[in-house]
Length: 607
Image (cartoon, rainbow, N blue to C red; front, top):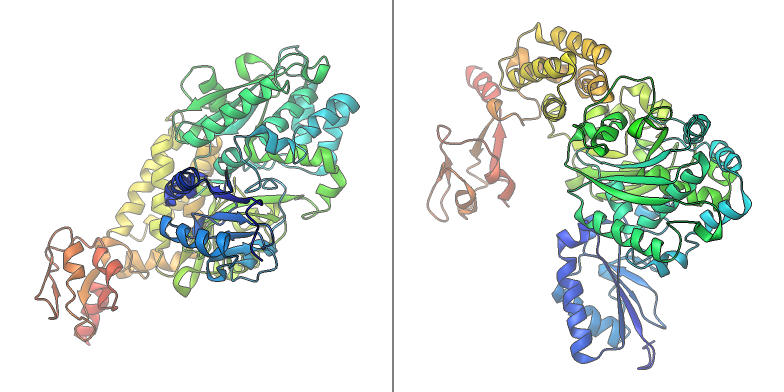
């Protein structure tokens, strides 16, 4: 059915960081220009990330008389066809649809097992318009709290919901609020930890970009519950879009009376400010974060006293992360029982994860606690990119650990993941395939934590440095048999002797890879080879003559001119010049570049 000229089509462009990076800004501007130039009956809006980052740019088209659909991989060129075919002629372009009303697509599995609480507004609202948030029960939770509930009632509701901190530690949120409320003093603070620093994690950024007001409302409710009048959102400056939309949301909330003095005509006053971090990973630790807000160097301090007793400027302070606060308004409006009905006995509700690495459907998902890793990675995430073999998944970032293939049926809850040696963390899931060297993975994460160590603790400052030196030596093929014992001894000493969570968890990637992939360490040390053929010092690249077409593409991308050969003739890689960067392997379209182990080659020659 074709819409009549009097009916307007609504087109919504996904304008989160993932979309903009993929070209959504060009699509949005091109559409805006066309609408204005041709006076088209189209309403143009923007929204945040719906989670299907691997298909960005995403464009939703709502045309009267047609199913509402979300198109993926939209370019300016494709946009022209969408306007011509879909909007003007009423023809849905099914091959480009990611999600649509009554339309079956290969992407349906991405959404079928999700339960969206934190992401309830993701892709549904314009994050820069308070009216959109209000239309979806926005600020109704704080209204209910201020007009019908006592602070103790709010705390009990959060406690009964079973909500645990989503920043990684999993401490009961209601209990944390209770401690802060019971601490003496009239001056108290609320802090939202938006200092998301784990490699491969982008959950908090997406929430702040796509639905910043749910975070503000959660902070308002927490402020009322503990008796605070001021809040801070600590967000890294590397998240400029999140910062921009948080600032807009705060200003609009003040204009509408949801922030400031005597909110909704009550005696409750509360305001929120932003504090931009400079990217120090250690400032994700709550006492280091507090020091940073106070204008000091971000370094952890010994606890107790905990922030709930002595926090920001020595006053009782409650700190939760972005995802935790975003859950709160939903719990207040829908009830603790409904939230607690999701998940497991000790891990209630849902959890947001960022799927990254060697996975087909990279992006952001929200699933009920208790779902298995297999379901998240293979059912929702679509499995391993290029249909390669799954090897491991890194959970919890540098503080977490690697879970191997034989533990894929592990439930996603705090206790089950801890038993594997990994942790829930803030929600990063980095998926690895059979080409990933687990020794190198451990080296990568330890290098990260070593560089991010504030240096206050000797065990963390020097211990991680010594561990990193050993791992670097092993990946070069210079490891010694005694290195494995040294790694484990150093790891346990660092865990025991470090002051904060960064140091206490820094050895986790090493310990889990030693536990589940010890054979790879032994191959590097005893056989001087990398089973995954990943470590540069233990591999080489060569041309397979029967596959080479002489297209010259490999020679053109080689940064050191190590590849020679005439067009349409078999090429040759000079091993003395080759830096083993892998550029030729990545671009070859004929499987004519082979990664080999010099040790294995020598053994074959000897035989």
